Length: 332
Image (cartoon, rainbow, N blue to C red):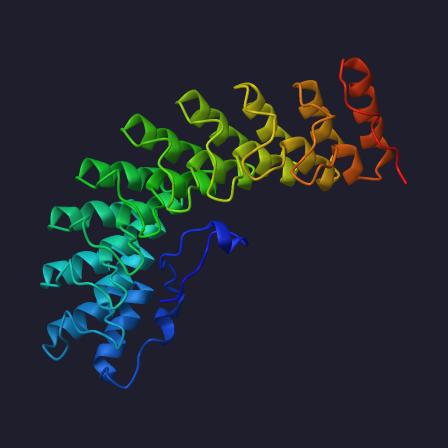
Protein backbone atom coordinates (compact mmCIF):
# COMPACT_ATOMS: atom_id res chain seq x y z
CA UNK A 1 0.00 0.00 0.00
CA UNK A 2 1.42 3.35 -0.95
CA UNK A 3 1.94 6.28 1.40
CA UNK A 4 -0.32 9.17 0.50
CA UNK A 5 -0.96 12.50 2.12
CA UNK A 6 -4.00 14.65 2.71
CA UNK A 7 -2.58 17.65 0.87
CA UNK A 8 0.33 18.80 -1.24
CA UNK A 9 2.75 19.70 1.55
CA UNK A 10 4.21 16.36 2.69
CA UNK A 11 6.85 17.91 4.91
CA UNK A 12 4.10 18.74 7.37
CA UNK A 13 2.06 15.58 7.14
CA UNK A 14 2.13 12.20 8.83
CA UNK A 15 3.01 9.26 6.65
CA UNK A 16 0.81 6.31 7.35
CA UNK A 17 -0.46 4.04 4.64
CA UNK A 18 -4.03 4.80 3.67
CA UNK A 19 -4.37 4.13 -0.07
CA UNK A 20 -6.33 1.07 -1.07
CA UNK A 21 -7.07 1.88 -4.70
CA UNK A 22 -4.77 -0.89 -5.94
CA UNK A 23 -7.14 -3.66 -4.86
CA UNK A 24 -8.31 -4.02 -8.43
CA UNK A 25 -4.85 -5.13 -9.58
CA UNK A 26 -3.62 -7.10 -6.58
CA UNK A 27 -4.45 -10.52 -7.94
CA UNK A 28 -1.03 -12.01 -8.62
CA UNK A 29 -0.04 -15.54 -9.52
CA UNK A 30 -0.33 -16.59 -5.88
CA UNK A 31 -4.14 -16.52 -6.11
CA UNK A 32 -6.29 -19.11 -7.82
CA UNK A 33 -8.94 -18.02 -10.34
CA UNK A 34 -11.67 -18.79 -7.80
CA UNK A 35 -9.90 -16.74 -5.14
CA UNK A 36 -9.60 -13.89 -7.62
CA UNK A 37 -13.32 -14.16 -8.26
CA UNK A 38 -13.99 -13.95 -4.52
CA UNK A 39 -11.92 -10.79 -4.28
CA UNK A 40 -13.77 -9.33 -7.26
CA UNK A 41 -17.15 -10.14 -5.70
CA UNK A 42 -16.09 -8.54 -2.41
CA UNK A 43 -14.92 -5.41 -4.21
CA UNK A 44 -18.06 -5.09 -6.32
CA UNK A 45 -20.47 -6.04 -3.54
CA UNK A 46 -21.74 -9.06 -5.50
CA UNK A 47 -23.17 -11.04 -2.60
CA UNK A 48 -24.68 -13.83 -4.72
CA UNK A 49 -21.37 -14.63 -6.40
CA UNK A 50 -19.49 -14.41 -3.11
CA UNK A 51 -21.90 -16.85 -1.46
CA UNK A 52 -21.64 -19.23 -4.41
CA UNK A 53 -17.85 -19.26 -4.21
CA UNK A 54 -17.68 -19.65 -0.45
CA UNK A 55 -20.33 -22.37 -0.37
CA UNK A 56 -18.49 -24.32 -3.06
CA UNK A 57 -15.88 -25.28 -0.50
CA UNK A 58 -13.14 -24.48 -2.99
CA UNK A 59 -12.31 -20.98 -1.70
CA UNK A 60 -10.72 -20.35 1.69
CA UNK A 61 -12.65 -17.54 3.37
CA UNK A 62 -9.31 -16.11 4.56
CA UNK A 63 -7.45 -16.50 1.28
CA UNK A 64 -4.87 -13.76 0.78
CA UNK A 65 -3.19 -12.04 -2.10
CA UNK A 66 0.57 -11.53 -2.20
CA UNK A 67 0.29 -8.47 0.06
CA UNK A 68 -1.80 -10.22 2.68
CA UNK A 69 -5.09 -8.67 1.58
CA UNK A 70 -8.21 -10.70 2.42
CA UNK A 71 -11.66 -10.56 0.88
CA UNK A 72 -12.97 -9.18 4.18
CA UNK A 73 -10.53 -6.28 3.96
CA UNK A 74 -11.73 -5.56 0.43
CA UNK A 75 -15.41 -5.65 1.36
CA UNK A 76 -14.74 -3.51 4.45
CA UNK A 77 -12.85 -0.91 2.43
CA UNK A 78 -15.65 -0.59 -0.11
CA UNK A 79 -18.37 -0.60 2.54
CA UNK A 80 -20.28 -3.63 1.30
CA UNK A 81 -21.90 -4.57 4.60
CA UNK A 82 -23.75 -7.61 3.20
CA UNK A 83 -20.51 -9.08 1.90
CA UNK A 84 -18.76 -8.25 5.17
CA UNK A 85 -21.52 -10.05 7.09
CA UNK A 86 -21.35 -13.09 4.84
CA UNK A 87 -17.58 -13.38 5.14
CA UNK A 88 -17.65 -13.02 8.92
CA UNK A 89 -20.48 -15.53 9.32
CA UNK A 90 -18.53 -17.93 7.09
CA UNK A 91 -15.65 -17.69 9.56
CA UNK A 92 -13.38 -14.94 8.23
CA UNK A 93 -10.76 -13.80 10.74
CA UNK A 94 -11.64 -10.19 11.52
CA UNK A 95 -8.27 -9.30 12.99
CA UNK A 96 -5.96 -10.55 10.26
CA UNK A 97 -3.39 -7.92 9.28
CA UNK A 98 -2.28 -7.03 5.80
CA UNK A 99 1.46 -6.87 5.09
CA UNK A 100 1.25 -3.16 5.92
CA UNK A 101 -0.26 -4.00 9.32
CA UNK A 102 -3.74 -2.71 8.50
CA UNK A 103 -6.88 -4.69 9.35
CA UNK A 104 -10.45 -4.78 8.07
CA UNK A 105 -11.43 -2.37 10.85
CA UNK A 106 -8.71 0.04 9.77
CA UNK A 107 -10.00 0.15 6.21
CA UNK A 108 -13.65 0.51 7.20
CA UNK A 109 -12.71 3.34 9.56
CA UNK A 110 -10.50 5.07 7.02
CA UNK A 111 -13.31 5.05 4.45
CA UNK A 112 -15.98 6.16 6.92
CA UNK A 113 -18.16 3.05 6.78
CA UNK A 114 -19.66 3.29 10.25
CA UNK A 115 -22.10 0.40 9.71
CA UNK A 116 -19.20 -1.89 8.85
CA UNK A 117 -17.19 -0.65 11.83
CA UNK A 118 -20.09 -1.38 14.19
CA UNK A 119 -20.60 -4.84 12.71
CA UNK A 120 -16.93 -5.74 13.02
CA UNK A 121 -17.00 -4.75 16.68
CA UNK A 122 -19.92 -7.12 17.24
CA UNK A 123 -17.61 -9.96 16.23
CA UNK A 124 -14.53 -8.98 18.19
CA UNK A 125 -12.60 -6.48 16.09
CA UNK A 126 -9.64 -4.98 17.95
CA UNK A 127 -8.64 -1.30 17.89
CA UNK A 128 -5.06 -2.02 18.94
CA UNK A 129 -3.48 -3.10 15.67
CA UNK A 130 -1.08 -0.67 13.98
CA UNK A 131 0.25 -0.40 10.47
CA UNK A 132 3.89 0.20 9.63
CA UNK A 133 3.64 3.94 10.35
CA UNK A 134 1.86 3.42 13.65
CA UNK A 135 -1.56 4.12 12.19
CA UNK A 136 -4.61 2.74 13.98
CA UNK A 137 -8.27 2.68 12.99
CA UNK A 138 -8.85 5.77 15.14
CA UNK A 139 -6.01 7.71 13.54
CA UNK A 140 -7.25 6.79 10.06
CA UNK A 141 -10.79 7.95 10.86
CA UNK A 142 -9.48 11.23 12.29
CA UNK A 143 -7.24 11.92 9.30
CA UNK A 144 -10.22 11.59 6.99
CA UNK A 145 -12.72 13.42 9.17
CA UNK A 146 -15.19 10.64 9.87
CA UNK A 147 -16.74 11.93 13.10
CA UNK A 148 -19.35 9.18 13.45
CA UNK A 149 -16.70 6.51 13.05
CA UNK A 150 -14.46 8.27 15.58
CA UNK A 151 -17.35 8.28 18.04
CA UNK A 152 -17.98 4.57 17.48
CA UNK A 153 -14.29 3.71 17.88
CA UNK A 154 -14.02 5.65 21.14
CA UNK A 155 -17.12 3.93 22.50
CA UNK A 156 -15.48 0.59 21.80
CA UNK A 157 -12.24 1.35 23.58
CA UNK A 158 -10.01 3.00 21.01
CA UNK A 159 -7.15 4.82 22.70
CA UNK A 160 -7.70 8.55 22.26
CA UNK A 161 -3.97 9.08 22.86
CA UNK A 162 -2.87 6.93 19.90
CA UNK A 163 0.01 8.45 17.94
CA UNK A 164 1.80 7.67 14.72
CA UNK A 165 5.44 6.73 15.14
CA UNK A 166 6.34 10.34 14.25
CA UNK A 167 4.23 11.51 17.19
CA UNK A 168 1.19 12.78 15.29
CA UNK A 169 -1.91 12.38 17.45
CA UNK A 170 -5.57 11.97 16.55
CA UNK A 171 -6.09 15.67 17.32
CA UNK A 172 -3.14 16.61 15.12
CA UNK A 173 -4.54 14.67 12.16
CA UNK A 174 -8.03 16.10 12.55
CA UNK A 175 -6.63 19.64 12.94
CA UNK A 176 -4.47 19.18 9.86
CA UNK A 177 -7.52 18.26 7.81
CA UNK A 178 -9.67 21.03 9.24
CA UNK A 179 -12.24 18.59 10.60
CA UNK A 180 -13.85 20.80 13.23
CA UNK A 181 -16.43 18.27 14.41
CA UNK A 182 -13.74 15.63 14.93
CA UNK A 183 -11.51 18.08 16.79
CA UNK A 184 -14.37 19.04 19.09
CA UNK A 185 -15.24 15.39 19.72
CA UNK A 186 -11.66 14.48 20.56
CA UNK A 187 -11.11 17.43 22.88
CA UNK A 188 -14.39 16.83 24.70
CA UNK A 189 -13.34 13.18 25.12
CA UNK A 190 -10.05 14.01 26.81
CA UNK A 191 -7.54 14.41 23.99
CA UNK A 192 -4.53 16.65 24.67
CA UNK A 193 -4.81 19.89 22.75
CA UNK A 194 -1.06 20.62 22.91
CA UNK A 195 0.36 17.16 22.12
CA UNK A 196 3.15 17.84 19.59
CA UNK A 197 4.73 15.66 16.97
CA UNK A 198 8.35 14.62 17.50
CA UNK A 199 9.51 17.70 15.58
CA UNK A 200 7.61 19.95 17.97
CA UNK A 201 4.69 20.60 15.64
CA UNK A 202 1.56 21.15 17.74
CA UNK A 203 -2.03 20.75 16.48
CA UNK A 204 -2.49 24.54 16.62
CA UNK A 205 0.60 25.02 14.45
CA UNK A 206 -0.59 22.62 11.76
CA UNK A 207 -4.12 24.05 11.76
CA UNK A 208 -2.65 27.54 11.30
CA UNK A 209 -0.30 26.34 8.58
CA UNK A 210 -3.26 24.85 6.72
CA UNK A 211 -5.50 27.91 7.18
CA UNK A 212 -8.21 26.27 9.29
CA UNK A 213 -9.37 29.30 11.27
CA UNK A 214 -12.36 27.65 12.95
CA UNK A 215 -10.19 24.81 14.22
CA UNK A 216 -7.67 27.39 15.45
CA UNK A 217 -10.40 29.23 17.32
CA UNK A 218 -11.72 26.10 19.02
CA UNK A 219 -8.27 24.92 20.05
CA UNK A 220 -7.36 28.30 21.50
CA UNK A 221 -10.58 28.31 23.51
CA UNK A 222 -9.68 24.82 24.75
CA UNK A 223 -6.29 25.96 25.99
CA UNK A 224 -3.92 25.54 23.06
CA UNK A 225 -0.55 27.20 23.69
CA UNK A 226 -0.62 30.25 21.40
CA UNK A 227 3.17 30.55 21.16
CA UNK A 228 4.10 26.88 20.97
CA UNK A 229 7.33 26.74 18.98
CA UNK A 230 8.33 24.03 16.55
CA UNK A 231 11.91 22.73 16.52
CA UNK A 232 12.71 25.16 13.70
CA UNK A 233 11.62 28.11 15.86
CA UNK A 234 8.41 28.87 14.00
CA UNK A 235 5.06 29.53 15.68
CA UNK A 236 1.46 29.32 14.52
CA UNK A 237 1.35 33.09 14.00
CA UNK A 238 4.54 33.11 11.94
CA UNK A 239 3.25 30.37 9.65
CA UNK A 240 -0.11 32.10 9.21
CA UNK A 241 1.72 35.35 8.42
CA UNK A 242 3.85 33.63 5.79
CA UNK A 243 0.77 32.12 4.19
CA UNK A 244 -1.36 35.25 4.47
CA UNK A 245 -4.13 33.42 6.30
CA UNK A 246 -5.72 36.53 7.78
CA UNK A 247 -8.69 34.73 9.32
CA UNK A 248 -6.26 32.56 11.26
CA UNK A 249 -4.21 35.60 12.27
CA UNK A 250 -7.32 37.35 13.57
CA UNK A 251 -8.12 34.36 15.78
CA UNK A 252 -4.56 34.12 17.08
CA UNK A 253 -4.37 37.85 17.83
CA UNK A 254 -7.37 37.55 20.14
CA UNK A 255 -5.08 35.59 22.46
CA UNK A 256 -2.15 38.05 22.36
CA UNK A 257 0.63 35.93 20.86
CA UNK A 258 4.17 37.23 20.87
CA UNK A 259 4.85 39.83 18.18
CA UNK A 260 8.54 40.14 18.93
CA UNK A 261 11.54 38.20 17.72
CA UNK A 262 11.24 34.44 17.84
CA UNK A 263 13.96 31.92 18.61
CA UNK A 264 14.77 31.67 14.92
CA UNK A 265 15.59 35.38 14.79
CA UNK A 266 12.65 36.74 12.86
CA UNK A 267 9.14 37.99 13.61
CA UNK A 268 5.66 37.55 12.20
CA UNK A 269 5.85 41.10 10.82
CA UNK A 270 9.08 40.39 8.96
CA UNK A 271 7.48 37.25 7.52
CA UNK A 272 4.35 39.11 6.44
CA UNK A 273 6.38 41.84 4.75
CA UNK A 274 8.45 39.25 2.89
CA UNK A 275 5.26 37.53 1.76
CA UNK A 276 3.91 40.78 0.35
CA UNK A 277 0.48 40.59 1.97
CA UNK A 278 -0.50 44.14 2.91
CA UNK A 279 -3.60 43.08 4.83
CA UNK A 280 -1.53 40.74 6.98
CA UNK A 281 0.98 43.52 7.64
CA UNK A 282 -1.85 45.86 8.62
CA UNK A 283 -3.34 43.32 11.03
CA UNK A 284 -0.01 42.80 12.77
CA UNK A 285 0.72 46.53 13.01
CA UNK A 286 -2.74 47.20 14.42
CA UNK A 287 -2.06 44.53 17.05
CA UNK A 288 1.14 46.27 18.11
CA UNK A 289 3.90 44.75 16.00
CA UNK A 290 6.95 47.02 16.00
CA UNK A 291 7.97 48.29 12.53
CA UNK A 292 11.37 49.23 13.98
CA UNK A 293 12.21 45.73 15.21
CA UNK A 294 15.31 44.28 13.56
CA UNK A 295 15.72 40.60 12.78
CA UNK A 296 18.84 38.51 13.40
CA UNK A 297 20.32 39.90 10.17
CA UNK A 298 19.79 43.43 11.58
CA UNK A 299 17.09 44.15 8.99
CA UNK A 300 14.02 46.30 9.52
CA UNK A 301 10.76 44.96 8.05
CA UNK A 302 10.76 47.82 5.53
CA UNK A 303 14.16 46.75 4.23
CA UNK A 304 12.61 43.51 3.01
CA UNK A 305 10.18 44.96 0.48
CA UNK A 306 9.66 47.45 -2.33
CA UNK A 307 5.89 47.25 -2.06
CA UNK A 308 4.76 50.88 -1.69
CA UNK A 309 1.53 49.99 0.02
CA UNK A 310 3.35 47.99 2.68
CA UNK A 311 5.98 50.70 3.06
CA UNK A 312 3.26 53.31 3.65
CA UNK A 313 1.75 51.12 6.37
CA UNK A 314 5.13 50.79 8.06
CA UNK A 315 5.92 54.52 7.83
CA UNK A 316 2.53 55.47 9.24
CA UNK A 317 2.96 53.13 12.20
CA UNK A 318 6.48 54.39 12.82
CA UNK A 319 5.23 57.95 13.05
CA UNK A 320 2.68 56.86 15.64
CA UNK A 321 5.30 55.31 17.87
CA UNK A 322 7.90 56.93 20.02
CA UNK A 323 10.99 55.08 19.00
CA UNK A 324 14.71 55.62 18.92
CA UNK A 325 15.23 53.64 15.75
CA UNK A 326 16.14 55.39 12.52
CA UNK A 327 13.66 56.25 9.77
CA UNK A 328 11.93 53.44 7.96
CA UNK A 329 13.66 52.69 4.69
CA UNK A 330 12.20 53.92 1.44
CA UNK A 331 11.66 51.73 -1.54
CA UNK A 332 14.66 51.59 -3.84
